[in-house]
Length: 167
Image: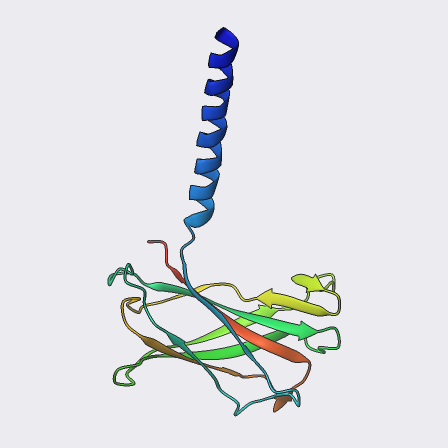
């Protein structure tokens, strides 16, 4: 009888631990994460990528957003980083809310490539910046590169991730 009670207590503890792990994993502050492909011929300075964020029903009106730019690129990418400009607008009336510049650093100080890899494709992101917008609004996010060269080659996809900013 004592042995059966111990098994039930152990099983209860395992279930509780698993529930806690699932709860912690599901508490992500990310509200939007989307990649758009870049033309195979290269990403031109005038080629603007447009992302549309539509709020979910539980998004709070008082939250600022934290934004991160991400890039998937090939092994032949020849720059130390990728500098992008992001314009954030209200979708309803086109009101400009914010203009930000983000840098995706591709190499560390020792010249080693940073980020995740899958064969000859790499993925890296910028540091986050907080933008003063309401995540309860539908937003347009327009992203373009602001590199010295007009056309940037060996970029496959560029993504944006919006998260609820910590206050």
